[in-house]
Structures are given as structure tokens and as C-alpha cells.
Amino acid sequence: MIRVTVGLALAELIAVLTAVTQGEPKVMTVRRGEALPSGPFELGHRSLQSGLREWVQDQTGHPVGYLEQLYTFADRDRTHESAKRRSISISYLGLVREQAAPGAGKPGWHGWYEYFPWEDHRNGKPAVLSDISDQLQAWAEAELPRREHRKRRVEFAFGLHDAAWNEDLTLQRYELMYEAGLVAEAGHGAAEISSGRPMFADHRRILATGIARLRAKIKYRPVVFELMPESFTLLQLQRTVEALAGLTLHKPNFRRLIDQQQLIEETGEVTSETGGRPAKLFRYRHAVLEERALSGSKLPLSRN
Image (cartoon, rainbow, N blue to C red; front, top):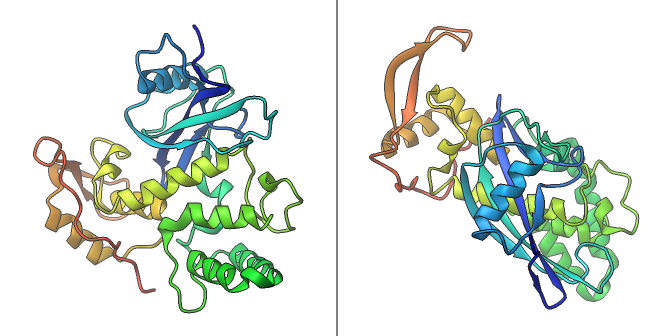
């Protein structure tokens, strides 16, 4: 196949393939967790999506179901390689159910929060977040001409002082940390904090973009069901949403929201795998509500 270039730019396809397994959000990686599946767009590919599917299949051996275009990354020197050739990445977000990945690219599933430990608030505020906030505030104070602007950015992104934590700002938080030199990818000595596992080039930034997109999207479209098995309990559904959002939800309000939207129906079966009394099994109502959106813009968070 012939690889497609635009001028001196190489067009690359890259996948943020997400699954939730046993209540933990995961991303498919290659190179033993160091990179996302990717490959050049070639003239033999029928379309961008078909090209991406071919690369994912070749590198991971994992089938791809739901797929949507995420973002195009074209920053200069974004791969830290020679400036003689510019790399343009067209990224896609894929939602799947985890399977073994026997592909040729040393594939493997890795948890989101291995790369972004400050993003998981299901068990309260992560300890590392205080260190990150302190160093970002010190970074903001150090630049006198832009101090107030930087301080406002840090407070807004990290929910400091009067600002509330907004789970959708994953990308903004990572980019602030990059700008401040708190992540290894910045290339000028990351601070001694647990800033998460680094990835090749800007793949962690692309992953942050995918996380932010999915966290926002689960509030207005029923894409979470792409990650669910054919039948599931209400608790499994709640745990999946919590895993993606990195937050704990208010159980009665969550179930009320699901009931109001009529997105699921009982299968007539129960499961005893919950450890307590048998729980009803549900399924998503595909035919009736294919494009129906979840109402509202906020998740029903727990006050505990």
C-alpha cells in the first residue's frame, strides 16, 4: 500500500479503544502500554474508519464496534521527531467489550487511572491531587505578568477554592500539567510527584481527549450501553458510569434517571452473582430508543 502524505505531513490514524471491565475503565494499548494503536492512512484503505479498523485488527487482534472521530492533532513537532516531516493524527474513540488481544503489536489493556491517577475520585480526593495543585499554584505564582491568568486556569481546571471539580476537564488538566512541566512528556524534568504513566509522543494527550469526550457524552447520549453486556444489573450499570466519570453517583437518583428515560427493560431473569439476594437483569432497548438522549447535564452525585 501507498501511505498518504499531505505535503511533508504524514496522515496517521490512532485509536482510543475503551472498555469497562469489573468496574474499571481501560484503554487498549500497544508497545506494552506505552502507545495507542495507530498506523498511517494508506491509499488502499477504503475510508479513514476502515483504515483504522485494519490497523487495530493487525496490531491488537481485537474487534472494533462503535467508532466515532475524536479530533485531529497537527501541532508542530508533536512527535518530538525531526521537523522535516510533520505528523497529523486523526484520532477515533472506540467503545468495546474487553476481549483477549492476540495481535502483533504487543497489545494489552491498561486502566485509565494508571495514566491519570488524579482523575479517579470514586474513593474521595486522590492523595496525589494535593501535590499537583501545590506545584501548579507555585508555577502560576512564578510568572508575574501572567500570574492571575494562570491562577484562574489552575483553580478552574482543578476545582480549587470556590471552583467545583468538573470531571469533563480531563484534557485541560493534563495540558496545564504539561505546560508546567509536571509530566514526563513535557521533556524538561517532571516534578517528583505521581504524575501517571507516560506514553509515546502525545498519546497520553490523545487519551485525555478521549476520556473527556466520553465523560461528557454519557450525559446526553446512551453510549454507555456500548460498553455493557447484553444483560446487566442496575448496579453494574451504575458502576460502569461511575468508572467512566471517576465519581460516585447517588444511587436512588441514578435509578430514577434511568427509569425516567425508559432506556432499559427487564429481561425476566435474575442473577445471584451480586452476593446478596438475586438481582433483576435488564437490557438496553435498542429498537425503541436508538438515538434517545439522557436528559440533563449533570450526573446524580453522591453527597457522602
